[in-house]
Length: 213
Ligand code: AMP
Ligand code: MN
Image (tube, rainbow, N blue to C red; front, side):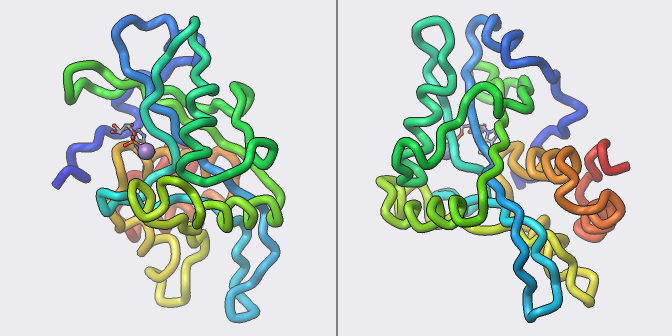
């Protein structure tokens, strides 16, 4: 299955946004993780910690909102990205705007089609009410029910059976690098303690992100 053929982050060349824009003949894909601190407790006792948004895609895999960008006029990646986010999430300008400040990763993925792909990843923290507005707007988005089946929140906790929650979630099928990007982001922003993240990865039998080792 294609899950097995997804390269690990450490097998890919990591570079800055600026370096990547100097590459010639590459395709650029931009995806973003939108998240908010969340004080809720499930069943009144399991802390949710953060609401992290992903989406069920048309291909049955989980991924982050975004897609391929055409670079015009000397490399305004984020202009196209905001248009793509608007059609996938139905958000009004003003509710959410991604800028180059939110760019956190760029990886060159091994060539699978005709051109190599640079995968750009952005992270944007919102307040919980703003994130709820994004979730609600997504139901009316142009791409809802077509390219995007539904926005979902990632469970960051592990239930007492040791599997339910994040470990079970990580066993889903993910588009391209989405799972690696998610794990990198959870570790980099410490959205859960590194030991918990490591355990969840081990239970799910997925590679532990280097930042959580
Ligand atoms: P999309 O139009 O969302 O399928 O994105 C275009 C391409 O970006 C995909 O075909 C993947 O090769 C790549 N990609 C890299 N990271 C992700 C991600 N987190 N989610 C979805 N696609 C990704
Ligand atoms: Mn997409």
